[in-house]
Length: 436
Image 1 (cartoon, rainbow, N blue to C red):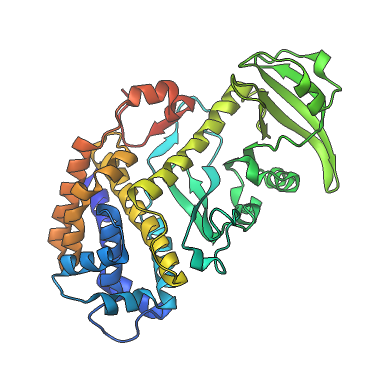
Image 2: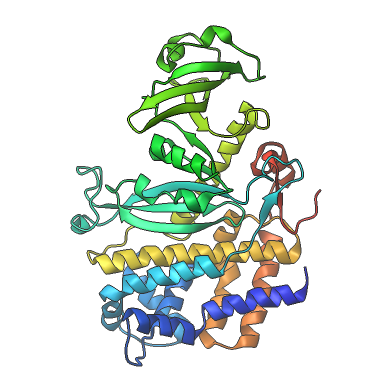
């Protein structure tokens, strides 16, 4: 890739973390109105450095990271006082939103086999929940009141080609998942992948009306009538037609068997025919039900199932959030601190992924985001130290050193295997990487 484009991405990153930019955001949300020693920029940089590169066990670790990064001697009490402000949560939420907007690099694209070429984007919807301190139960009530009375859920809409969320909402664990689904209008020309918790007939009708495609798991409680039945090879199965779905499921089936059905449902909000794929997996008591509006002549049942497996990419994102950016509950009963640190973890993970994606584009190698997150302590510490002194030439050298380090130490282990059985088997190519 050309040096001009590299310079543009580096400039974008430096602008995102520039003192004047971050301090202006802090003043805008009311975190800090006067010039103080503990500025919004210093708070943000120390938190992101800690979450991205260190193992944190307490709020005191963040205060020590602040002092280490800036060579200061700030005591715990004034540092904690800044985090305890209600505006702290707003500040970190806005910073996370800016990171997701400004640090995006396309790393995946549809291949030449046209399986995914019909879609502008593949969007994955899911949520990840975890418990917080019991004192926060009035702000963040949890679903499991005896086990974890207070819990939150991070509702996430992920754009697959960039490998980053395009929409994030933090809600109490008791909030409805469907309320955070992307609008059907915004999904026109795109493919949505979602788990069964988001299934709703009315929403599917709206997606189809706006020319959006979907593949979604379905609750096993539905019972539409089968009006058309085909096996995995597309051969008509007339003996199954006219039955209810529950009656069909009660019949004996072979492991690995797949049925491609047209089902008719009548509901209060409307009726219609939908394509439903039923697959039986060995060891599972109930079959997997997947509903889609993809055309059968272009997308076989096997292709739909493999496309739905791309939903696993959002689970890998959540793993990075929790395992390598420390998205978890800290020992605090202050809701502003609890929420602010969640957004700090999200922003730190976004920076880790940005560096992985940038290294791929610069060096033309497939870079693992998980390996990048594991190696962040070695790769990114120098970047945050350079940002702390705010010298442009030093920041650039630190970024180039980090990208080179990742090119050596964070390459994907089995890119050829990915093309056989991983994320690339369905027609995804890595942008900027020559085909092997």
